[in-house]
Length: 196
Image (cartoon, rainbow, N blue to C red):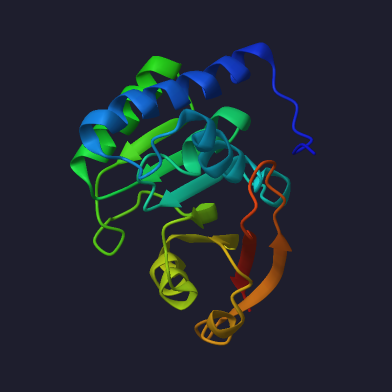
């Protein structure tokens, strides 16, 4: 079972290099609880890439990007998409800047700010997060940064029945996609929210 994504040799190299950098920096900065490189492939890399078929647009904002998940793999997979990685942690932001430099990514930028206080220079077609525990809060904080026809994409584990009932007024659920991640036995879902 695979994700049915085709990457050229350069992209494959960049994804591998990203994982190597994550592993290296993780030893000093504690970027992720997962220490095993093989587990990082499924839990981080493939999980992040599993959303690719469900998102489109020219601009993407990854809120609470942390170690660059899912934004960094998306930036590699979609070189035509402008990806902004937003995280308030200085060490994580330094790591992300280093990754962008070493992978020579032209379509990714890092912003070290809290989403609540960031004065974004533009609106985004897709706003994604793997870090938010609450859908309603994620939608509320994302609203002012979302382009008119944009989509909020929330990566979740189990199907979030209760959270779906608390989506703020003015928004509706476009779809909830079950994600199939090779090598990952956990439940994964992508909730797509749009303006009502």
